[in-house]
Length: 424
Image (cartoon, rainbow, N blue to C red):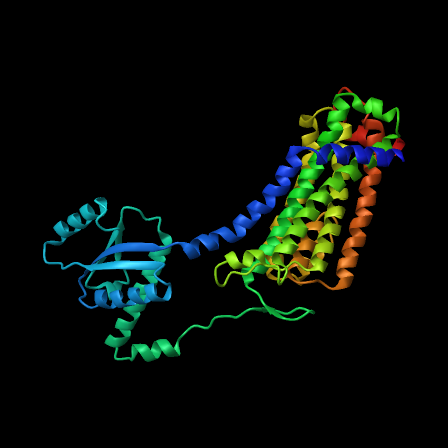
């Protein structure tokens, strides 16, 4: 067995037996699933009962509001329910307001509305409550008030409010994703969640495993273990074995995540589907997306981990190394700037150009593939350019690593690093 294979086996065996690997392998998909599904699930199961007192000085809106709110309760299956109480404005207004405040504080009502006589002209209605964080309830109430006010204005102007509402009704888009293997209904959120999830996983794994390579090199250098290792294998074999071993750990973790996601979202095996509320779909991960995801992870990993290995070998401790390592973080974080424009138009010139720049290709090409499969020549060109960049970075890293791994003392300058590259 070659020195590279022995080092890779040692790195892989040491890390896969650690608790941290298995905790992160289980925790991340659980957290992402919770982020994607739980908010919709909780909202669909939540019931909002609201005891509302209404003082209507127009004399017409409150009764119509009561009918409108009853309609909302019926349409939502009583998930949004208003218990309306019409209050006569028979006492002086200030006393009535004080009494309503007292009842709200005593939890007799949740809120009270004050509709002034000129509310239709001003377009304002007062809402008083002890808590104003119930934005969902307030939004439903606001929409109901707007509909009631609109009908009343139409009626006062001599128009048929019902006919106008029917003629000016809105249109909903029924979205269908077109694919070579057949078109299927798909919610915009499902595609968005898939693109965002794969983008974030590539972003975090590239950063985490790159940092692991750098810290592993620094640890062996500071503990002088590297001096024992280089007496048995060549420095280039040590570097290659470390990159391959940690890369295999990342590949193992991503494969577990990907296989779990495919099993959960494959048609016919949709285990989570029975738990989802109506109208919420899970994204489907195709084989093409899965293969590209693995390949782009490997490209991103070798590109950035080679740089991190070079930084770790050149410096003496993490504090010194972080100054140069932050350069890699800049290139990993920059794709976030292009994230939304590419998500909105994955075929734009901006999307094509930025996804072909090697440091951005792993994350941005993945974003385009998850949103809409780019032309094959663009994918192949992105791969070719990134492979060339990986070889270039690994060449640089090997030359610095060969010298820096056995250098101790003061922090090297950029001139010294350049000298190592030229003469190693």
